[in-house]
Length: 111
Image (cartoon, rainbow, N blue to C red; front, side, top):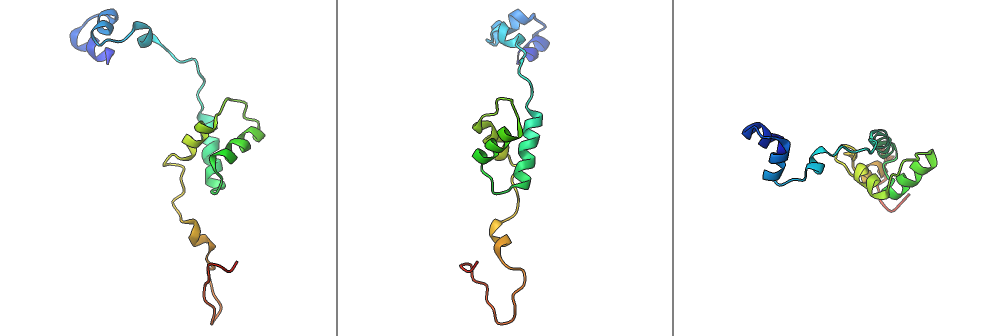
């Protein structure tokens, strides 16, 4: 927003921040936090391989694997529920037997 004002009106950062209104310190702020791309990639791998795991269980699994970064359960839930990591198949279909012998009927209560 500030860059747009600076380009359109050809003013300094100080005047553009005053016009928008944005603090100059916020405009110049650069995060020191390390990226969590490797952790997110690992969470997506776990979600794809262990489809039935919830975010609490994935969080415990990450801790056991030695991920020392501060990954909270909410972060795991956000990565696990993203549209790119959710499976597109129905679990109930996997429970049905593929072939039935003659005279048998499929019964969902028989395991």
